Structures are given as C-alpha cells and as structure tokens.
Image (cartoon, rainbow, N blue to C red; front, side):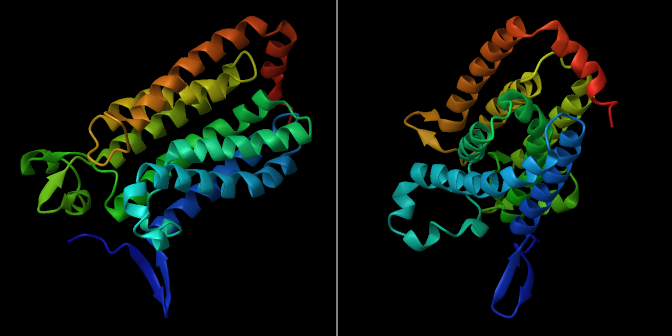
Length: 268
C-alpha cells in the first residue's frame, strides 16, 4: 500500500511529507554551511542573511523551470502553478535561482564568490540527497517499468511506493539520492585537502551532473527539450563548465592560498 502524501491533517491544513522532507533538507544544509563558515574567514551571519534570499529564489526558479517545460498542462490548470506541495520542482531551476540570488548578495557585500561557493557546496548536495525522498512520498521522479523479481531486491516500503499504474518502476529517486550522498561524503572528506577557492563547488557541479546524466536516462518523467531530455543537456553543459573552471582556477591559485587551506580548519 502506497504512503499517503499527507503526513498530518490539522483541520483544513494539510502538512505534506514533501514539505517535511524539503524543510529538513533546508535546516540541515543551513546548519552545515554555518559550521563551515565559522571555520573560514567569512562571517557566518552572512550565510543566514544570504539564505533569506537564496531559498525563496531557489524555490521560484525550480518551479518556473518545471512549469515552463510542462506549460501544456499548466496553461489549462493555472491554479496548480503555485501548488509546489504536489511536487514538480526542478533542481536545475533551483540552482539557477539560488545562484543568481547568492551572486547578487555576494557582489553587494564584496565577498569572495568561490569561497562562499565552497562553503555551500556540501550543504547543497546533502539537501539534494534528502530532498529526493520528497519525490518518493509523492510517487514521482521514478523510472521505467521493472519486474517483480527486480524490485524485490529493495525494502518492502520502496516496493509498495514504486507500484504505480499497476506496474513496478525503477526507484530512480533512490539512485540519485544515494549518488548525492556519496558526493556529499567525498566533498566533506576532500575539503581539508582542497588547493584553491572554487574547487569544492566545481567538483560538486561536475560530480552531481555526471550522476544525474545517467539517472535521467532511466527516468520516465523527464522534462523534454525537443527530442532531448532537458536535465541531460543541462548536465553535459555543467560538466563542461565545471572541468573548464577547475583548470582555469587551478592555474590562478597561489601558494599562500594553499597554506591558508592547511590552517583554516584548525583556527577555531
């Protein structure tokens, strides 16, 4: 039996599992970014102030991206455009919206863009790993049909939730969540060994995009850009930009920056 997407009903107010999942992701991501900011030369209060703009901008961007690529449905159901509790948030749209808001804040307060990006990178991928479970509760972001034998390798609660339209489906939400978790662990372990500002955020972009490209190929509900899957096109572009950025920043990194990273995490 599938899980009810409504976690709690308080009179006319419905609290959805999707919202609980996303809120958890935001809280844990914020706490981690604040922790890393305290170990850097950036006032951690900037992190909290920045998130006041980044979070709503990310949600708006995520919804706009999804609605644009599903306009044939939303033009006939305009009331559903704001119903984000029903799901339908694009990660690439969220990253674009959040990045724009963050960039404007960083520019205003003359912070180091790449240093701030490195602070946020582990938080973002952790939030994505958790956020994919919102798709699980809403029975979305799943893959093509699979056999009973294949799905039986997964826990029963996942089997039940992936039984959609009379057939079992690939739990692609789980594949991406696990990949994101691995990327998060890698970034946390690698952080003390980074050699220049921007290395973490670019590694995040490249590694996440690589995993997303392959998972997207299994999904059955992809947003399409003509004959192409929009997320795969975006992933290839981001991988290219990440590789280019890593080589570009590496050549510009200075020796004193490397010494700074060696002591940054032990200052406090």
